[in-house]
Length: 539
Image (cartoon, rainbow, N blue to C red; front, side, top):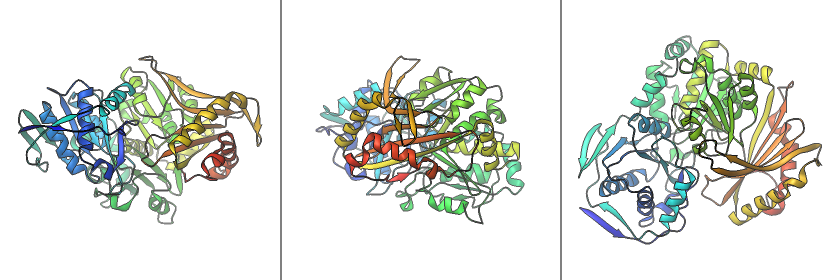
């Protein structure tokens, strides 16, 4: 039954921050998926005798890819696969299941917040035994192997039925199909005060959770409606669809505009939260009020004591370099560990594994804690609901109380999409070379205090990573430039801009940051080099 199939390498299978993301039609090429999976297996020393967790967000082509991976795992001697029913498993739930079962690794079929459908994107995330993303060194080994692979192994059999929960066998490999929600729900019940949240919903508190036709719809119905008692229908767009119903499943002010419009209408509920395609990102909204991801991380950190699992204290907090500095002020006040790391969730894992931090978050709507090794959208929403239940305050009140205590950081991310990769790389290289010359200069009223590449040395393994360029100004303003690794159409230049005001909390963020955006475009010569005179996306 085991076939050894001859193949030729594809040279474009370099992994990003969590795996590979490609256009669906790219992955549908003959042997494309098989080449990558076999290369991954080979690069980690084989998978004979190992246990892996497997699932995904239900996007287009996942059903076919799942069957191929199952047959390849068996052909390569894997001992056991734990698979979410019908192939569904959110990224945070996958990390939960991996850790609970002490599995050797996991594969999540998702391109996260990227669009789905036949003309959309496909992705594979690889997690190691700690439940988090693999290291850069492992990624490089996999990439090197993809460039030299000549064959892969696969079983020549019918597809496996993944519709029922239970155990079945394929050759010598055990396949356990599990309820994708059960373990994750139990973990959430052990972290938060579910009784307090139930009382909140019984009091008439109105709530919307938007799953954006992605994987966390069933999770939301089970947790928010069935267990916590939110009214039926509180979970919107709850059925996972291969093309996400045409939505771009990224929970931000642009792609979740339908939810933003609801929350800024006269019929707005008290609270709304949204997740992305695989459930690791979140957006938080109150009545006519948006909470920026950077503020959300800082607010959750400052209010940790309301959560049962953290009552005894938290070890520390970390943020990506591109995330605003709001949480740094909280860490100083709480006298806890504080770290700034490169973008990419794997950079938090060593800090969590070594007990240095409890909370972490990054600029792209991702927040979580050491309960797993991935960002966790539902966890963040439950955290906010728990704070509201304990304080009796609204989302806006909680946020304004935070600003009164720490001041407000105005912050936005500006994306310049679809740039030719060589142009983007040269822009960053030239900008880096000019950074020292900026110090002491004034640009449109903003005086540069320091400017340098962001270089991080991991305190656990000593590895050094350079990720982005930082420009600081007197008065607390800051600009971060970096290239994104999550797109599939050329390069995306991301420019993160913040300013700090200890007194005035009611300025309009786009207006407040407009001059700084102009400064950023001058410093990086964005229009001259890319032809773009404004960002393609602002979040």
